[in-house]
Length: 243
Ligand SMILES: [Zn+2]
Image 1 (cartoon, helix red, strand yellow):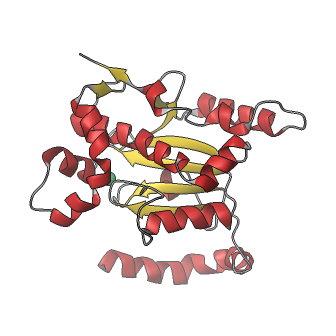
Image 2 (image 1 turned 180 degrees about the vertical axis):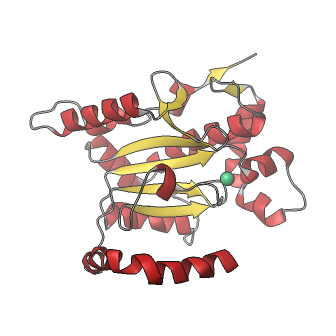
Image 3 (image 1 turned 60 degrees about the vertical axis):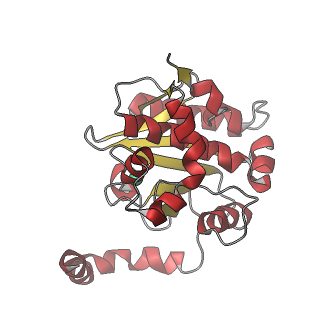
């Protein structure tokens, strides 16, 4: 808490004046670039790895970056956030961002009995765990928890597709889905490539290639819906089963 309070003082003393115009504009409304669904983990820092500023992203964070099923009883905060981002803010991109060394994925793997609320929260991820235990793997030398975390990102993207408002926008080419995964030790943000079936570094060539595809899809007369070019097409397409 000491660090936070010192940060507040530093902001007021040194940087507040530079942000006055930005926040005055944002006070009139928000039009974020994307919805980011990320883990609560303190090390997942989109303001650092994606250089974001206030107003850039609408954020849902929870333990394990989960999305509940649309037919669950009302009250799930991430379902409300998803609905608001799509129906009110009309975001055109949704990113699910997992990360390495995720405590939620480690708890899921270990069936941690000392974390009963965490275990209950993670119950919807049981099918991902079952797939992992049945041998589903993505390419790369990752630990079990990291493999599970990557599979979990893909499963949550599939869950988003179950929402009618997402499905409609995907089929109309008004929504793209992205799977990101932050490798902490490598300081490497990775993006799921559906053709390779793997999370690959989101380096400059890949960023430029994705931007070019987005531009082509949004050009007048483009025949390919935007969602087909960038997003994750199918979780099954990305999975490799090792015996
Ligand atoms: Zn996590």
